[in-house]
Length: 71
Image (tube, rainbow, N blue to C red):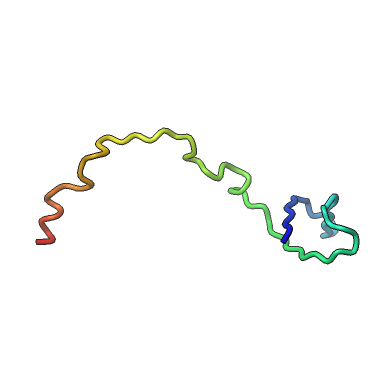
């Protein structure tokens, strides 16, 4: 299945025109219209590239006192 994504603006009369689609004339296509969300236009991965620091990478994940409750 070929997928083509485009953004367009709805006209004042409620019409939508998408130009330059890579499909042949007369070919049947399915059209799904979704609003562009504000989050989609921003940074999708805000922590990408942020350095990670491990204080004690080989230390225990929790205090030994927490495991006493399991006895």
